[in-house]
Amino acid sequence: MGDFHGNRVKEQVYLPDWHKDARLIYSQNVANLIAALPCQSTCQSMSTLPGSFKAFSDVDFHLMGTNLLKLAEHLRVLEDKCGRRIVLAVEPEPGCSFETIDEWIHFFENHLLLGRPKLEESVRRHIGTCFDVCHQSIQYEDPQQAIGQLIGAGIEIAKVQLSSALEIDRPWENDPALRQLSDFAEDRYLHQVVAQTDSGETQYFGDLPDYLDVATTRRDRSARIHFHVPIFCKTIDHLNTTQADLKTVLSEVLSTQVCSHLEIETYSWGVMPERRDRTPDEQDMQDDIVAEYQWVVDHVASD
Image 1: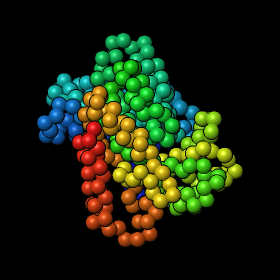
Image 2: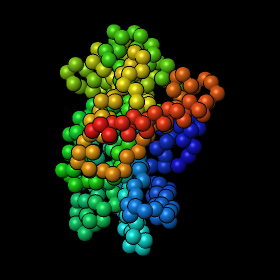
Image 3: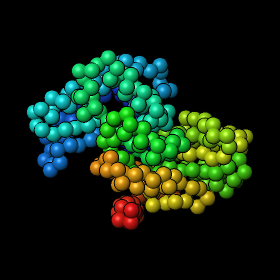
């Protein structure tokens, strides 16, 4: 709701959250604009943050659920008026109220549906999931299994955001990769980290500098970083990406046709290390965006 490309965004990107009337009213206004736009499709989606940010305060799931239900009713009335179905696509994200698909399903079933049988049809029709591949990869979730969980729970996947995260292998003994990773620490966006040990246990870090401070003191098998990198990159010099998960999700979506709205969601061009300290080159950015589309088209064609 603010300047997403401001000098410092960080945790402010989650404000106002779904505790606040301002988020509800803003979302209603966005839906009204969508409903007024000319479009051949009879269904659109709009993504939103997953409730709130855990570090802010104690989460009031009941209040957030109430506001989401109010929006679902607003979307139902809009559809009755104009015949356009709009789905709010809630986007699980590291560090937020619903980080994992399990947490999102639990909230959906216990704070939107439980005890409200008369509202179930409207909720399922107008509240769904934005499956951001980068976010679920950071959580070390099996993407195919996560999609299956949503299908099994009857929660619509309204939008899939095609995205890829950074990954570093064995950082405590991988000096070149660790030095390179430090270049990705920057002041505009929040770059949450989830580290995984050889035993499969995971630990969350609120921002990349927090992890860099302790990376050499831990024995992590790998760590994944919330930094949206170009989806055509399998590696970036000494670092890996989670592109393999993206390929899995694309294949799953194509084979099951579980979602028709795919959105390439790389927004971090301006804070990539090689571009941060120089005048933006619009042609370079255009070429990269075209390359991302071409990567998706080629993958779809070969699947």
